[in-house]
Length: 588
Image (cartoon, rainbow, N blue to C red; front, side, top):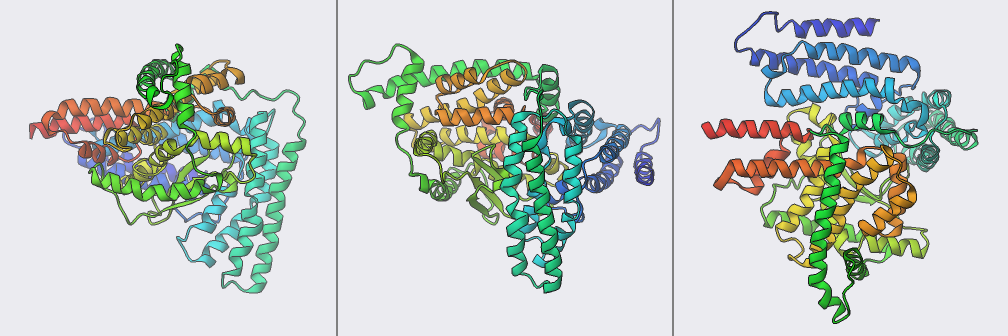
């Protein structure tokens, strides 16, 4: 009650800046009040979400871990209701463009949180949602404060781990089998952070031996709690597990909150189906062009998909050795940097480090490559390019994987994940004056930019304008398109694994290993796979509108940098702001 009272007090204070019946130019007052409100909103958000706070570089609550019980969820619901009431006191149309976007992001976050707790209820059926290791790894690995201070926060936070996992066991009812398996894999994969990495870091600290002994004892108890949770999941009787499929109603709602697109999930799916037809037509033309070079006078298949498949299969034979996969990625980064500078596509910040590393165990089982960026409060931290290891893989599986990530696709992967894709976009996002846009960033914009940047690089001549590279990009692009088709068909429909594998191998020309991994991913996640194509589609539509408006003044670099300057906001709000700004600039 004390917390709710304090929230009510500052809501009253800030909403009082705009009196009823007030008219005239009040934008500056509203913006000042809104900015003050944002600061209070964030601090209270972090009190309820200390792990999230740590991940974005806000370290006031590093030592806290919220036990996921009914009480904590009720607190969160109360918080969202107070914030929704506070937001309703502002006239969104009187705010600046930047604050307008923040308003929409905050409103969406509060509505989404209420929906997730009251409607989705994943805390009951998703055991993988209970995992503390990522935040502990962040505290250990990021040098935002002296080691001794971070280790003490780590130690204090561990106090809550046994209660955390005991509560998780109470909450779980009829869990999804696939998510249960993922929870076991990720928790056991990351337990070494508590069990080993913490002990190794203590040896490098100046913490007294007696204190270290206590800290190690707590670490042993914490590690055991994680192992016990995994063992409990393995032994859990679950005769009627929940299906991993969300169902159309829940899927549309989640799409609305997660993607924040102009259209519905159904409309996006329909657009992806049409895009697939277009891409197939382009790939057929390129395959016919390349056929004589690689097959001489051999008869060309009449079936266009078979023709494309044969050409891709031939080109895929060129790839690195299994042990050289990470090294090849490291070598690609400076080449991409040089090309972006030479073509004047974007301004890059050389002061922001990009570290290529083996994918940590607690992240395993979802994607083979990803980027982890420093939070907006910790802008000097490292950005990591996480690369899945092929160590211990059977030769056939490794070969299939490497044919998928052949010499062409490996370059495109690095564009997508690093430069000028995710890494570059996230550096720009952290430069945005609005911290809300970084914290409540839109996944469709983030992934859409990465997909857009691939095509932009090829259009600028990356790869020497070779038809081989363009063909392989179309193959890669079909991932984004078919991700949407797959995700919607599985979660809002009834697509089987066999149908999914056929879609991915025959129509998206993926290797069997890649298709199997994607089926695993779609069975442990939902909606996120649609973000790639949705964001790409909306960015391309915005660029077309911007180019038309600019006319002869249009410059690609200016579009790219202006677009990125809005931070990780939904494309529909960036579009509204950019086109509105351009109208004003034209008059001036």
